[in-house]
Length: 388
Image (cartoon, rainbow, N blue to C red; front, side, top):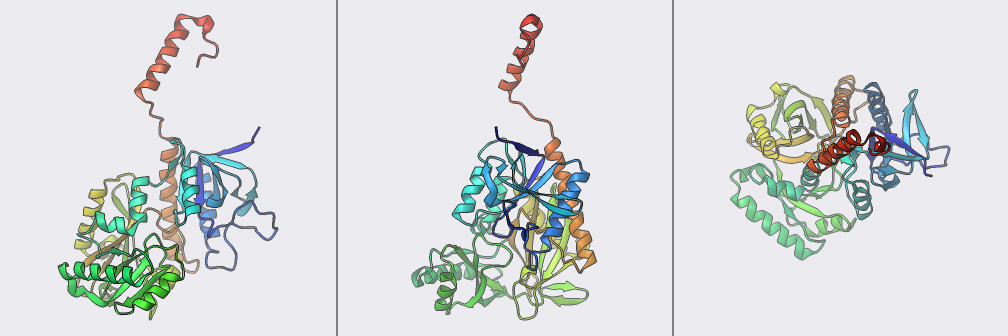
């Protein structure tokens, strides 16, 4: 008979970044490779598991490559006495904290398998996850607030010319068309972290094709590049920045900005951007108002998610994208970032604890079945053994 370890919560990370515990190599001692840009995630998720333990939640960490069934994995990591421990054994949990997206067919199939039972619950509601995972869907849902966005069918001159022409038509009709430069941004339609994001002039079709051909499995979208180098006021200086608002329960629980490094237009930390936490009061009131209108449309009161915005040099606000899995990592050298990131993890774990401990709601049919069994026990005591 298969021996299974049951957990209250299981963190499932993409195997493209995290390593499986199902490794016989003595050199594999942590989920994330040491001496790599992801090394600090070992500290982050070690802390996550410690906070789970403090909240009386039995938790484990595994990868998308370990998934073997609904809520099941073939191996997992635990965090004990400040050290990562590999366990090559089947793990199971009904509550999944999912940190992986179906970025290719293999991961898509793994995700379907993981949630193939209604008993298995993702932390992020599937409908919201799918909306934010697909940037084209996000634009279609919020065209009034978002940057004009057009999907590129494939890496051919015909598809690129058609997409650029469609985008130009949207730009000409846009009320704030003067915010857009003569450059366009192409980005992975389902990507994150500023990976596979490029900036070109419209006439550079051949360069666009070359970029797309580097990985033909990726689907791209194009958007106009916004002039935002002096869009946000930070410490009395106008700077380029994207602005992130993190919501839980329909309320803002954290805000920060990310500023690109010199010579770079991408603001992501993974691309050298600098993250600075700011208070809600430091944000323009019309940005908060716009964000809350999006939140009202989403109507996901108990969900954790992030909304990213950008302010143009003319002061106009654009919704960039949403994210149901905002990054939990922090710069180990910056104390403030560590404090704020740990605070977010504690909030998430408390929400997980609520989900794990919430009462099971039975259908009317299930309730009637139980009532019938209880009535039979009371009427025929001798037959009661094993009825329920």
